[in-house]
Length: 394
Length: 221
Image 1: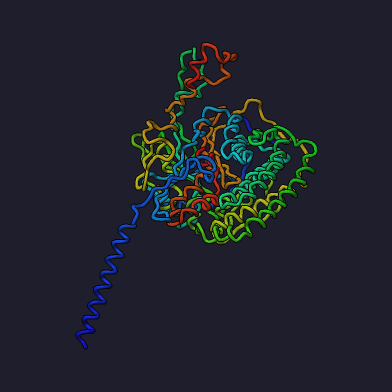
Image 2 (image 1 turned 30 degrees about the horizontal axis):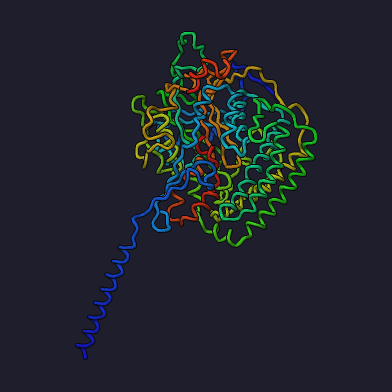
């Protein structure tokens, strides 16, 4: 009896070992050496020419690294051979979807060095145009978000409604994408007749657009399952990497330069809510951006009601020479914190300009964030981080 | 409201910036003799120059002790004025002799190149610009990528653009430039070739019509 049971045990053991060996052999045959996947440089999800090299194990990313520089235009070097008014033309093209917002911090830095302050009407108009470019920029993000997940409709809505905002920007500045409207000491021109009424009507349309997107996309089951709990950035990591804008606020950090910093703009004269989300996942980032777009339309409405009268240009010399010094100014741009560190030598042009763009920091987290995610999630995570290539490469 | 200061004589109104004064004393107390100089512009910003060998250590201290938890950016600056000027010289004239004496900015400096970084404390709602000198020959400094992970890419950029070594950086590959690129583009003695080949329009009043004899040479610009 004992003999048989022993033999049975042996047989069981043997068969177990044999089974293990067979499994191991199968595993060995099936094992991939790891595959390297190239996403981009030309991929619809890359908003330009960001290339992502991902090493995969099956469907999972083991290692990922964005490869930048396909669109590097050397703006930091070019500013050194331009005069101050000429630099605004360059910086317009950093984040090309929200161009006006790029001019503002640079002009503010130059004004700070010169000891000039724009008249309050100019400050209010600047803030209005700043928020309009935020709406134009982020509304395209909201439409584009659907495309990354296979929903085509939102992008048509976004392009339709962004056009209203671009028309407003064009009516005031003459440029749809690159206004180049800011001057040191104020603005090129006052607002055109009828701008206020028209803007109010458009803001109403944009609020409808936000509601539409919220109903169409954010309530969608597929959208939720593809973004909730995916690409989580904890609060401390977000701060360490210097993330900014909605990416930071979606990780639960209550930090908005419009409220937390004193710039010569009109934000501190109105009331608005800074939206945050505790989750830190892709959904949170998208959700915060949606709320911010709606909030921006309310900000514009308030600004239009309170806009003071007066000149739009301070007294500045024809030829602008900026006294020696260093200045750092950053603002809460559509993509996040955008700042310029301007060093002047009392010359016609800056001595050195360090451009701190939001997307550079925002995208530098991807090697950490993409590790371990599945291939389809790469696209949604990148889309939710929201970057503009010109803002990374500068 | 719209006061315009003259370029030479700046007499700013006396502003007492208690928050930044307070911060300066705290920084001196925490960092001790690692601090070489502190410069405060009231109501604007605070600049702190530190000893090069303490660069990583002071970032750690500022983060852990003084609550500077947000990393904004890191970059470098070359204080030598460019020997090529602004590329606006008349090409028919011999190039003018330019003054290339090195003058440092706020909080001083002893070397041609400096590394500077900006940290922000979200609780104090204040930022600080930190500077450190790097040696003229073989400039290098300790990496802060293991204190602030976000510094990783900024250091890679400063490395390729200024040729500054970051000791202890995990992966100092080029971020933007091709692997075989020679030179450090953001150094002042690196010529901006586009300007060298074709002078900035505006120097010459009348440009030749396209298709003329001169246009072939300019095609490469």
